[in-house]
Amino acid sequence: MVVSDRYPYLDFECRVFGERFIDSAYVDTGFSGGIVVPQSLWAHLWPLYEAEVVHLGDGSSKLVAHWDGEVRVGGKTFPVTVLCLGDEFIVGREVIDRARLNLSLGQRIVLDFDGPNPLVRPCISRLTPYQPGKPIEEVKRELGLTDVIKMASNENVLGPSPKAIEAMRNLAPEVFYYPEGSGPDLRSALAKKWDVSPDQIILGNGSDEIISYLGLTYLNPGDEILQAEPTFSEYRAIATLCDAETISVPSTDDLRHNLTAMRARATNRTKLFFIGNPNNPTGTIVTRDEVEALLADLPDQVIVVLDEAYYEYVESAAYPDSLDYVRQGKRVIVLRTFSKAYALAGLRVGYGIAPPEIIGCLNQVRQPFNVNSIAQAAATASLTDETQVARSRKMNSEGKQYLYGEFDRLSLKYAPSEANFIFVDTGKDSKQVFQALLKRGVIVRTGDVFGCPTFIRVTMGTRDMNERFVRQLETVLAEL
Ligand SMILES: Cc1ncc(COP(=O)(O)O)c(C=O)c1O
Image 1 (tube, rainbow, N blue to C red):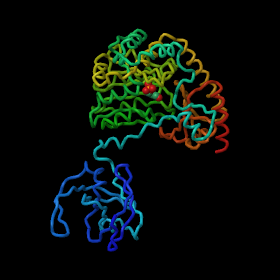
Image 2 (tube, rainbow, N blue to C red):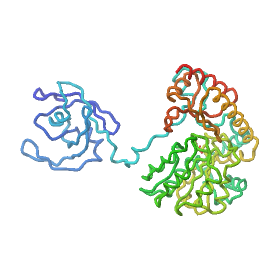
Image 3 (cartoon, protein in one colour):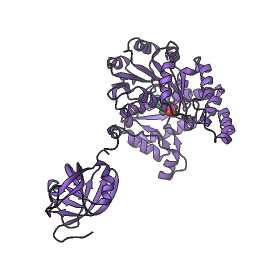
Image 4 (cartoon, rainbow, N blue to C red):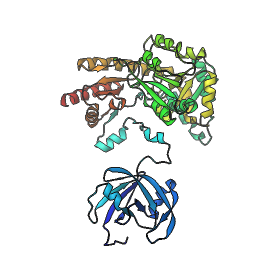
């Protein structure tokens, strides 16, 4: 780069939609307009430009690319015209003046073209990336620990049925074939188990995928979804992705969905009414009576999504038999999964049960081979082994009773749970509790991501794991 002694030059760092460039720049006292960027950098801005005739200082004019955009200099954002002209980077004096930078020769400045990338749909920048529970290996690596337990993602540590493992082994040599796209064997097995017809069932790459399909199928920009607060993040995520509005209704003081208040927010724009039942992260349920009162009183276009990912763990007699609503042809979809009680989270297989008209629409959106063949085989085999689920329910039920007792002893408030986790109020900053537990090799989830900054969510483990968690929690709470 040629450095002129007439003008100060600057080292600069430039960020264009996340990419970083380091170069030098002139501050051209004669050029007031904006910023001239070199051709090399322009390649990254090119999609934004329009061509414009620019009058050059020597009296001639030239057709050059320009972009009217926003630049952040020295922490301040303002509109500038950016020109592509030659090979050098020139910052107009006016830009520097307006940014009120006191510059000296060779000083480093940062020019930031980072705003939302105009090539990307604006809703993408409104998405909050899903924050998964920390993996065991990552914690071991980062903290130099050897003995780490994960009680963070509502997995089932008892592991899958031996029949599922055998089915996976048997199918391994066959994976060069594509799977049967709609999963006919698994759908038949589920139809038989739940006394519905196979055309009332759709399989998903986890029930997450069916939540996405619901959004892609039903949500136009400006439509609304209803959900409780706090709840599972993926309902809002798909609504945001579809440019729909999420109407969140606070839960009751005992952390239950307030269905009456939610119903009051339903409008003719409401398309999907999400109910986590049991809800994540609270573990609470809505009752049969509450659901039936709601179903009798909703605008016609609304589909009620009863997300029953933790169905197998529920013990309450007040829990609705949601498949009855499907059998009656109501606008309801029930979501279930093999990730939790069946312990197949890594395979990604879930399903939805709804009237055939809804399933037909979702199938229009479904990826042709969305559930892989190993997952289909393992899930089908799991259904033949009721002992695995029964053992898991028993461990869960005993774990809950043990943890309730310990939380009572420690005077910690919690929501009684119908799932395989408990949401407990530590009374301290949950991020600090999380970090302190992590150092002691116990991974849980913080409540702050759910808007409950003093809560943690802990997944039931084996008796040993639960005891270790309680010991460490007690120490941590005494220290904080
Ligand atoms: C309430 C709820 N729904 C759906 C899911 C997604 O489960 P999967 O995609 O593994 O079937 C989860 C996972 O944590 C959940 O908590």
